[in-house]
Amino acid sequence: MFRAGLLGLIALLVGTAQLQAQVASNAPAQRPVAYVLSEQVTCVCGHVNENYVGGPRGCSQCGQPMPEPPTGQGGDIATVAYQDAHQHHDSAYYEQPLAYDEPMHYGNPTASCGPECAPSRCEMLLNAFSNLACLNDCAPSPALNICQAPVMIGGGFGGSGRTNLRGTQIVSGTSFVATGTGTIPVNQANSSLLYDVAGNVANPDFASILTGTLGGDGRYTFQVVESIGGTNLGLPPNTVFLNATATEQVGGGIVNGEQWDISVNGLQTFNIVIPDAANAGAAVVGRSKIATNNSAMPRTRTFFNYDLMNNVPLNDAGVSVNRFTPGFEYAFGRNDGASIEFRVPFASTLSSDVIANGQTQTGDVEFGDLFLAYKQVLYQSTDVVFSGGVSLTLPSTNDLNVQMADGSTALLVENQAIHLMPYFASIVNLTERMFYQGFIQVDIDVTGNHVVTNGGMESRLRDTTRLYSDGALGYFLRRRGEKPDAIFNAIIPTIEMHYERQLQRGNTLSDGIFVLGTPNADYQSNFNMVFGSTFEVCNNEAISVGYAVPMGDGTDQMFDGQLRAVWNRYF
Image (cartoon, rainbow, N blue to C red; front, side):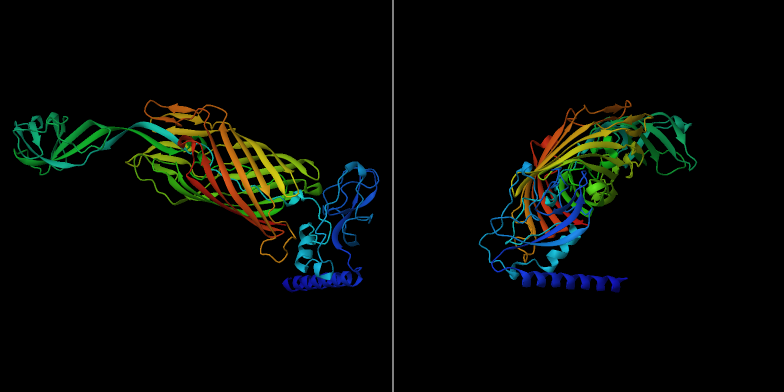
């Protein structure tokens, strides 16, 4: 199969070379040559048109708008037309009805037009494979082909990033040894003892209460009251004394002056930052939205996204997140007017098993929720495309589990939420080199997540509805075919703006012990700007690099900075 494909490719190259040679030999002297890829397209009126790249955009009989040529729906025709540099009398090239009043755009009138201006084999092959034409400098240059606009680079982590968890937990102080002495009756369980850490019973630190218990190992254990002399019982900060016990080290009966092991328990109050519990599916990986590495145009492509975000507020200290997102988009339907998209995000990030007031693992590999999207072109002309659709995320990541210091589960958020996200998108040619593209999307949590606490509370926590608004301005610093021997076919710097806002107040849950809620949650918003550029390696392959900078104050910033790199391969 490989050998047959190789032979076919060689035959295609030879045929292309023969076409170039034929054009070169037949070309009138000092007349520009335009290589045009066209196809036969039948209008709704029944008239058969030859739809040319850079040429007609309407039926030559009835004036009905035709698809942006070439569409791949008709038979491809390799056409060679000879034209003057400033006058286009060739009817095969200019069939545009006057009603459209769209003038031709000229190439370089001073170029030395001849065989040396012919497109390379690579260019002609890419033209055929990608259904996009490259015209040499000697030919009339069409206006910016809106299909060539790059994807929006995108930026942002998404959501609030964190939730406050407030509550109490029983913690143990550091065990230590004290000397015990006191009144020891015949029934030693009724002893009344004083304990001193330094061994000086004249200034006891604490005293036994109630009746002691005799263990199976022959040792007595007594309950102990809180410190008498203010001795540090080894409890951590923000902790009050709860209870303590004293157990003699050596069994066989209580003796004055012997050593006792002291264990102290306290009740600690905490207020910690944990990942966004309302959106457990994206809590440690980040949210997925349509404007990330996407375009209003349906396209068949595979892609890979990389993000490095610094100081994401998933805990009190902040976390560095490395996110990776492979995926694909498949265009189908008439003129490829619709597409479906699939993404699988994962990241090196904070573990979804969070330890309250402890050291949670970072650099853990966590998968995010699966992302699916449908896109449909609603309107398309030469310079404008409007599309719409819906995307959704399906729960596929780990549950969010908050554990106490002793390993018990304080809070479990079961990832069950399905997010439905309708959107509209647009691309508009502003000039021959400048374009705008934008997305607007609403994120709706339709199911919510199941929440369980160790206090016995079971509830459902639903994420707030959010609005995403994204816009970008791009400029073709270099267009396809302008420098055919350069490393990059096209260079398109862009400036992007990404805005996110809650449309509802944040939810708070409490079971009497734990209170779960997002700080500053009332209509929280964040705004980022991305500065980047897209570099086309070939007409069907591009690399985009950008850096996102958060705007506004620190309360709503999701990172200190974000580096983005995306790769797209078009088919």
